Length: 593
Image (tube, rainbow, N blue to C red):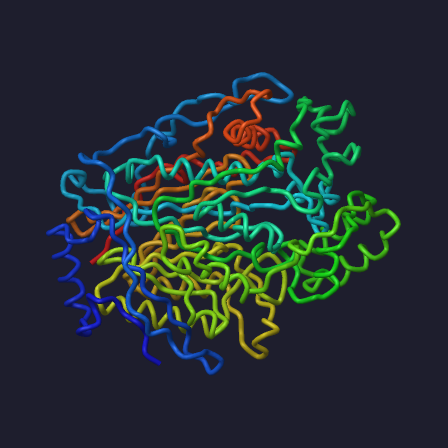
C-alpha cells in the first residue's frame, strides 16, 4: 500500500545524499516554514498488515498559527527560566511562592558543543509537550481511591481541580511569545498520553474541550452536588469542608468552606491557539489504567449507583501487589473484591456518561468537528485510523522534520507498554522513507523505554508478538534521522542519551506529569548549528496560575493555583519527579549529517 507523503517530497524520491544536501540548503536559507508559523500535517496512514483498511489518500492538510508580533527574540518570562513555584518554608502544610529560576544546562553526552553556535544556528522547529494531564472524574464509581494507603497515585488531594489546572496550562501556552531560545513561532502542542484518568466518556469530553476550547462542568452524577470521597466523612481522605480531623488535616491541610461546590463549578477553556496533536496512554485505553478493556461488569459498574470508598488494608495490599506484578491483567481479582464489598458500598447518582470509551470512540471523538479548535482535523488521527483500528500516525512538523506518534499501550492489560509487530514494522518503513526524503524525525509515545516491558498478547491480534523498549531503542538507533524520542508515563523529568555503534544517536526526553507536583510541560526547540551538530533545547513551563494561593479565592484561577499547592503537599509526593538540572532546562547537542 502506498503511504501519503508531503507535497515537497511527492514529486520525486530523494537519495540519502540528496537528503543531506537538502537539509544543508534548508538550514542555510532558513526555508523551514517557521517564519510563518506553519506546520504541514501529513494525513496519517494505517499500517500494511492484512487487517488494515485502505490508506487515507486525502490531501495534505495545512495548519498554521499566526506568528507572534515581531521582533522575535529569546525570552524567559512565563517559563522556569524566569521563576519556579517553590516552598516558602515551614513545616506541615507548606505554602508556595515565587522561587529562583532553573538555569539552562548544556549537555554534550552525544556530541561536543562547539563555540559560536549561538550565532550560527537556524531554527528547524518548535513545539510544546503536554503529558499525563489525567483529567479526572473524581466521582467515578470505578476509581480505586481506597488503595491510597498502598499507593499515593490511587487518590490525590488535588484531583478534584484537574480541569482548572489543565485550563491554566493552556492559558500559559497561549501567552508564550514563541519559542524561548530562538523566538520562533511554536508549531503545535503534542499530548503524550494519559489525557484522561479512567477511560471515561466524561473525562474524554472534558479533555477535548480543555484543548480545543469550551465550557466544562467537572461534575458527574448528581448535577447539584459532589458525591465523592471528599464528603464521605472517612478519615482516609481530606475532607475540605468538614471539621473532621482527617489524615490530611493532621498533616496541616486546611479547612476550606465552599471547596467542593467550587470544584464542580463550570470552567471555561479558551482552547489552545495553535494546532495540537494527541498520543494515547494506558489510562486512556484501560479501565483503571491497567485492566484489559471490554468487560461488561466494569462497564455496568461505571454507570451505576454504587461506589466503594473504603477497603480493609490487607485486601487493598493484595490488590495493589497484584497490579504491580501484572498478575491480574483482566481484573478478575479486582472484580471479585468489588463484588465481595457490596454491603460496604455507598449510593451515588447513576450516570450513563461515565461509561468507558472504546479505542474507536476515542478516535471518532478526536475527529468530531466540535473539537477541532485550531486543528488539525482529528489531531493527528484520520479516517484511515478508524478504518484500520490503529492509533498511530505520522505528520509533518516543518519542511524538514516529521513527527511520529505511537500507540504503546497493551490491550492485553497492565500499565506498562509495548508495540505490536505490525506497528513496529510500520515505524521502520516510515523512518526509512523519511530518511530518504531528507526529513529528521521526532518520535512520540506515552511509555518510556524503561516502562515498555509488558509483552502480553493483544487479544484483538492473536499470535502477533509484542516488542519492548529495548527493541524500540535498537530500531530508532538504526536510523540517523531520529533526533529524539519524547514521552511521559513515569511522571518524572528524565533525559537519556542513546548512542549506537553504527552511528545513530538520539535523546530520550521524558517529562513530568501535570497532576503530580511539579506539574510541568516542556517546550522543545530544534536548531541546526551549521557545524555538523543539532541542538534540542528544552524549557519547562508551569501553568499560568500564580505560585501563591489564597484559600478564600475559589475562582477558576485561584483553584488552579490551589491545584499546584495541594499537589506539592500531597502525602507520598516524590521529590525525585522534578529530576536533576540536566533533565530540565537544557541544550542537548547531537551530531547529525
